[in-house]
Length: 495
Image (cartoon, rainbow, N blue to C red):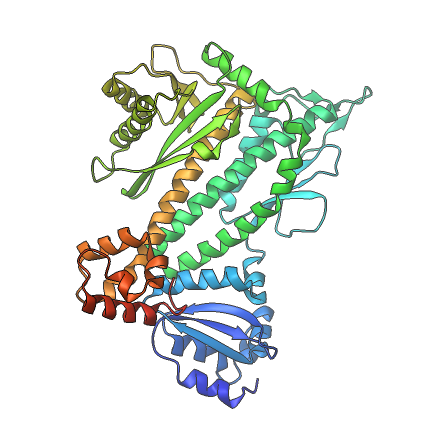
């Protein structure tokens, strides 16, 4: 293409430093946002003579041919470029970033709700139809294993199965009673089968959110290790998965097949665990870390079988440094129920620990330390979905299609999602706060004082010199210099 002179001059003047660039079309619309280790080298590569003709991918050729102007933002490091790129993509939703994010590399799960017996199929194309979609999923092997597990757990149909309609109007799902059905009936009515589909959709939705939290944590870890291409690819998957999940919420609220299901599951769970009645209130704890760093914990609260997010809690580990799931579990369980005891608030009907006997023992140790009687408590070991009791009762494995087990899985998966999200948030915050490392004369004590005083980088950047001076250890001269530094770095070039 023939670039205007001012565009050529802009490219020539670009610095050999990290940053983010915004490509615009002739109408001034942002059509692509990208990051670069070197703005000069990366952006210049778009305008090499004959570049568009040598590119095999039509989307990229079309992008290059539409570029009429550009803006750039210089940042101090590649991690900040990665974060700013993501923020601007979310803000502007540029056409070509959306095209790349929606690329057909990733699999989706499609459930056609217009079918009498909806099947769970894999696809790479999302259509505007009556189907419900889950994904995209970057790890196809994990997704296929999950679908196989769901067939065993819920007795649903995958794409390769042909059910047979019986003379009485019922359906025989398989030509024999396969072992993957376990305790699920092979001959069902259409209504019975759709109830299975609803439960399986809810399970897959929980898996989607669990994978989303895991992907966010992996993205933050890759950025911290300076594996920026991997981090950018994971970020694209996160964006696409967030978009898909957002579009399914209306269906979840309107789904009538859930009505009455929670009550049935609560009754079944109370009976299976030998409780006095249905566990109306349940709390589940999970520990999250990546390679032993950023150890955090989550606690989620369900009331009458549904998430009650006002009572969710998250914890940073305070009593030790390092990776010890048992000590971490003892600490957070102790902190949670010490506070409830002091405030004379009721304990939940059931406490669920994500883990095995070691984690249960740590939780019980916390109650011993508090000198209070614990509520009913169990562990849920994920490998075989085994329920573990703190006493001499044998291990319990409920049928995989049991409403009681499905309720416990939703509770456990929500705790896992909440913990992983918190872990990822802490890692992202560390990257954002690293801008203060470049300001000379500001040691770790005063950095911590500033962040504690303002509560984060966003308010810190917005502060005046006089407001900065209100922080312990920050004098007038340092406040002025820091304010000038943050103004240079805070004009939209960092996050």
